[in-house]
Length: 486
Image (tube, rainbow, N blue to C red):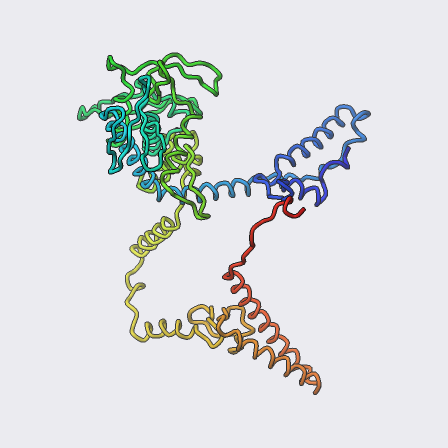
């Protein structure tokens, strides 16, 4: 039984990697879940041996998996790095996504309105394009249109429905940073108001029902969010002007909720039904497909509803919101969780460091920051000119002397110039000839010094070759399937 446990180096490699179609890829958790099972088995055996030595004592053995191997620090750091990179890719293009979904909503609404105004069997124009409204035998609740050029038949009612709710989802998520289950539970009762005691001003608030942390909270409704919510309410009102009551299913609690005037609801047949989380993600993906956005790898950029939460926290803190206030706004119990959602940008670090230096300079004597003289300035600029040597660039610090007596090939701070490769090859060949001559004449002391220079020349050539390989494009060709091989 113990021999079957993966305690060897080969077994550990099998744990760290998973096999997918005859290829091995590293696991995201580095196999820690599998190691935890093995470690728990050994610890259970030790505990059972203490309780019943006669039966389990022969199986007790030291656990081959040490406690430090179970650390998830590297896994958490990798996940944080991936999430930060995901946020950095999506925050700059968020305005593009918002503009695209708004344009799609307006275009779909214009197409539907013009089609409704046109008689069946006639043409109509929407967004500068001609469409044809077909004639149907039986009157239908949906409005159809045909593209005369391609013959494609579109359900304009469904297209307008998808475009509107895609716009509503993006706008509410990016202005509030709420979770997807909180989005589906927004109702007409979520709109409340608060009157300031001093001025009597009314502040519109959005009440978020308890979800993940079982704690309710209130968000201030911005003017942009107020326009979105009013547009949603105007759309879902019935003939009496009230928001219809719908029954939703709580997938986490496994219960049916009482009828509520939910904001995210749609008409299906003769009844209104809530839009579930499984219906929100397809609408979001469809909106993204119209933007044409791509990530650094050239693949279509994907947004998840939770990405808007990270974008909201990062944007709020970067624009001056204190982290402890952001914690209350998004409903986190621990401020470290909020800071984990917040992405650090290199520009933010640089600006913060420069501001720190400016504050530190303000507290120090002004004579320490005097204007340099012309001689000092010329000496400083001359340092950058002296960094350029015959074989490349020297990386010595400012004001330091060369410790290799200008034998640049031996210096690890020399960054060779690829254009000077032929000179380094000539130097290497000359060193080989001089080493052969010194060995022939018995000059052993000179041989050792020449071999050090030869090793430096070989190292500089290897550096140039590695840099050139990184800039070379390798054509891999098209992969072949097994059927083609046979």
